[in-house]
Image 1 (cartoon, rainbow, N blue to C red):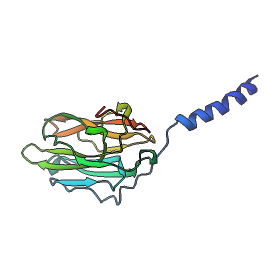
Image 2 (tube, rainbow, N blue to C red; image 1 turned 60 degrees about the vertical axis):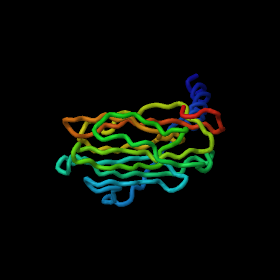
Image 3 (tube, helix red, strand yellow; image 1 turned 90 degrees about the horizontal axis):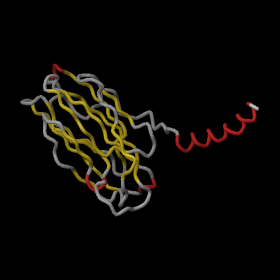
Image 4 (cartoon, helix red, strand yellow; image 1 turned 45 degrees about the vertical axis):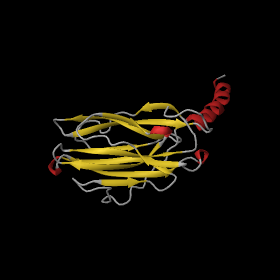
Length: 199
């Protein structure tokens, strides 16, 4: 009887895993280990190549360097079902020393970051570079856990699931540690055009 149940349920489990299981993108190519998007206490601008989106973020904290971080990003092409980006833009600036929450407007996906360091605050202001894919809409959105897990730690955030995209983030800022924790807003995108904006 056990063998019959195994023969019946094993194919079902295999099909379900193939349809709903995690698809691992990795490993991400950040370039050389010494290749960061910025140097300490300097501004930077990072944009994925056309048609690609951010899928991984790595950062190292250094209190001696003005409580600043080095940043590195990995990009991958968006799913073919989304097509080519129809427009890209820079979102509003999120000020240094404050907590903030922002998603890409117009149903955009994060395809880059721009940041400027402010020594008076020992923090950075941030802007998202967003790209819209036709009239696709987000759904099944969720917030990641906090990155880094504790202020002052290194962080390494990766999108392990295929067809999920970063749409924004919410951050908290510690005036004591002079560091940020990030929760990224992650969504799936419809495979059809929809009439909604900034869902």
